[in-house]
Image (tube, rainbow over all chains, first blue to last red):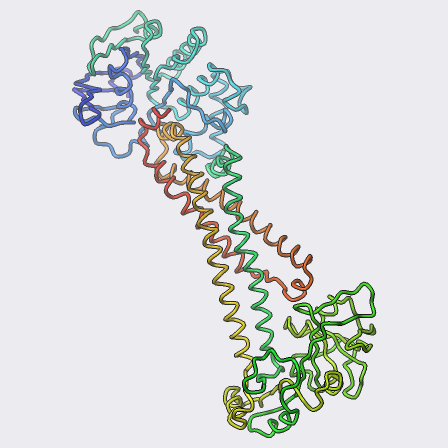
Length: 231
Length: 385
């Protein structure tokens, strides 16, 4: 897949909860090209996270079509394999496993890839060095700062070489200075790895770092604007 | 880190809770192993009552309860029975107990299974019918009035050896030899010439039982029936197999009771494991959501939780087994009267059974929490606070 092709294609996507009383997505349309960095913005309950969950294969839509990395998400049976291979998640609350060391946390996604323990360790160490945590590999997450934990989470998201990184409020639990460092890191990795970056945020200054800003309201795409960062 | 290492590492996140779960299951395993070792030891002892060479039939007075320890039948029955078909040899024996024994050693303790000294009077050439195949030292002579041989466990209990003296019925006897039959009742006793014991207990020409050894081709039951038919309402018989069966029946009850106790312990242990693992899954709901988000299959999550449960129970197996083995040994050392009577069994079957039960508790205890964890919706799990 080259950078002119769509890696995400969503048409008239609908998703309801509570027997359809809550319409999280109500005719969402979106196309994202490979290697793009987009931010999804909107108020609480607008459908941002639901959209991210559909793209990441964590949830299945009720109606419409959604294709991610060439896979039809409405019909595919093996969403685990899809997530393992194509998607890297970065959550607001980093969600690291507290009893495992930093390097062991980064290894976690590789259990489904038939990688040997030795290769797993090498890959995890390389990534931790790239996020400047090479000296903290044996520490427990509880001993790290918020920014360091989020860097571990980013390394974990990248460990299986995904084609898309889905970041849900990645700076939401960080102070502004640390948040900037994390955003710079995500941007760098996006450029270096040519990975598609989809970031949900409600902070305009964070959203403005993307190449495109999608505004979502009532489960629909309200605006779709390119920023000055656009290629 | 391998997946197995992860499974072994995870249960120790909450050390207190995991330790309590391990203690709960370990108690159950300890009960299973300890009771297994003791009942196994008793069964082995029972088997030795059927050893080759010993009498197959014991003849007693009809209506006898078997508790009488003094002479109840005439000694001449031993000669009379010998003439019956299928009988190879007979021995009249007199059983007595000497509960007021004073020994010549100031440090020695009063021994015998149940507290008293069990004394059997028997002719020295008939010792094989009691299961005594060989004597360490020499046996007594039939006309001696001051010689005895002593069972191995009784000798240990009284701290006596060949050449020592022992006071019985106010009279000193020299221990000429020790014997070991493998039967804990017999090995906890003393034997002396029949005539000497008859004199000491004023039971001249009387015996408690007549031991009967059948000829090689004879059927034990047939010979037993021949004896009772020959002396109706006078004598009754019991075969060694009957005795062993009676003991085995008793052991069967103990075994059933031990299983009941074990099952209760297992049930409590399993509830503990389920509780621990359910709590674990609740606490780690968000983490399970993350594992699903990074691509873990449901089967891997199920395997992880189930594996953690099995790790807990296998540690409990090791802890429980060690406590049981050490505990039984300490108990038997601290209580010599029991220790001398029972040799605990270390049959691999006992440990395999305990291992199997630990594994089963792990699987049963972990199955529901593991299934629950594997079925969690990733989005709901990630939202879990």
